[in-house]
Amino acid sequence: MRITQTLLSGNILRDIQKADERRIITHERLSSGMKLNRPSDDPVGISFSLQYRTTLNEVDRYLGTISESIQWLNVTDSALNNLGLTMGRVRELAVQAANSSLPPESLTAVSQELSQLRQEVVSLGNTMYGDRYIFGGHQTLSEPFDNAGNYLGDTILANAEITREISPGVKMGINILGNSVFSPAIAAIDQLITNVNAGNTAAIGGTDIATLDTAYDNLLTYRSEVGAKTNRLELAQNRLMDLQVQVSRLKSDMEEADLSETAVLLSTQENAYRMALMAAGKTIQPTLLEFLR
Picture 1 (cartoon, rainbow, N blue to C red):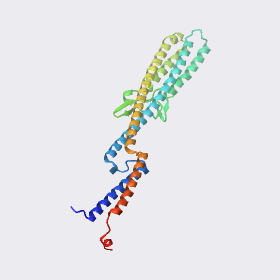
Picture 2 (cartoon, helix red, strand yellow; picture 1 turned 180 degrees about the vertical axis):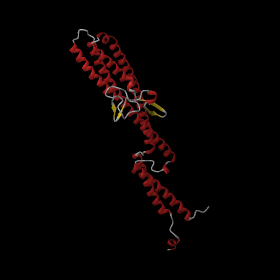
Picture 3 (tube, one colour; picture 1 turned 120 degrees about the vertical axis):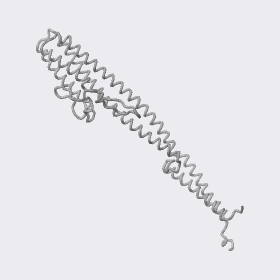
C-alpha cells in the first residue's frame, strides 16, 4: 500500500492532537488537584467515587444522630445523678426524723427541707435537652410534671419510646419516662413528709426509709440502663468513625491526583508535544506548489 502525503500528514496531525489532549488533561489535573474532573476521565473510577460519596453521606448522618443521642442520654444521666444526690439527702433527713427524742421544732425544720427537696425532684423531672422535655415520652413540648408533682406525660414506654436509627435498619430507644423513676421518688417523699408532720417516728424508721431505698434502687436500675445505652452508642460511633476514615482514604486515592507525580508527567508530556511539533515540521513535505518553486 502506498503511503500518500495526505495520509502521512493526517496521521501525524492526529498524533499531535492526541498528545495535546493528554497534555491538557494532565494540566487540568495539576491545576484542580483531582484525577476525576469529568465522567469521561475514568467511568469506572467515577462509579466508585459516587459509591464512596454516598457511603460518607450516610456515615455523616448516622454520626450526627448518634452524637445527638449521646447528648440526650448525658442530660438524662445528669438529671438522674442529681436525683440520686437529692434522694441521699432525703434519706439522711429520714434517719434524723426517726429519732424519737428529736424536738418538735427540729421535725418542723426537717419537714420544710423535705418540701424543698420534693420541689427539686419535680424540677429534675422537668429537665430539658435544648427545647424538649426528656422525661415525658413523645410529649416533649410540655412539662411532664406540674407544680404539685403530678405526672402529665406518656405512661407506657412501648407507645412513647423515642427511637433513633444508629445504623441501617438498627433503631435504639433513648428516653426514660418520668413516671417510672421520678414518680416513685415523689411518692416516697410525700409519705415521709406526712409521717414527719405527724411525728410518727416508728413509720419513718420502718416503712418510710424502706420505701426510699426501693425508690433509690429503682433509680440505679435506670441509671445502669442509660449507661449501657451510652456505651453502645459510643461503640457504634467509634466504628463509624473508623469507617469514615477508611472510605475517605479510598475516595481520596480514587479522586485526588498525586501532585508531584502529575507535575513530572506534565513536564514529560509537554516535552513530547514540543518534540512532536518539531518532528512534524521536518517530516511533512512541502506542498506541490512549494515543490515547483
